[in-house]
Length: 180
Image 1 (cartoon, rainbow, N blue to C red):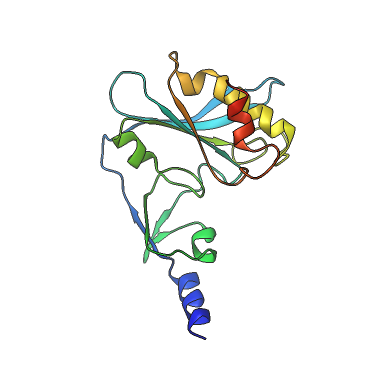
Image 2: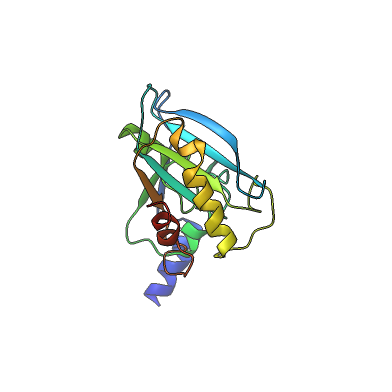
């Protein structure tokens, strides 16, 4: 009974703390167009530190909508339903620029990284028709990795972010290994 009550409580009030990013902590380019090999346009948000230079890149590509961000409400911030459904062992803290299954751009840019958050094919603002965990999705992310947005003219180390497709035969490990 105690467990059931705790689950109901987390549905009503998720264990999250959402904060507004300090002004000037990152430069944001929204809805940058990236064409993949078949001409479909994927849309990415690019966050980078507010200085010139090359930055290691944290790449997140998912179907959850890169622009589905926490929204301020009368009682705090409204967050993705997943934070309500999935049990959190402790309070999760992230900025208002963080969507579900995406890295917190504020946290990473403060540490000198760039963050590329991409709507997969057919999701959010990206074109095409989605085909989750498919060879097509793998090719799209491969093209994204090799494309101009993560590199912005200069190669830098790349980290692929996300758990959703690790166990699949077309997981991110496959996409990143193709890069080598």
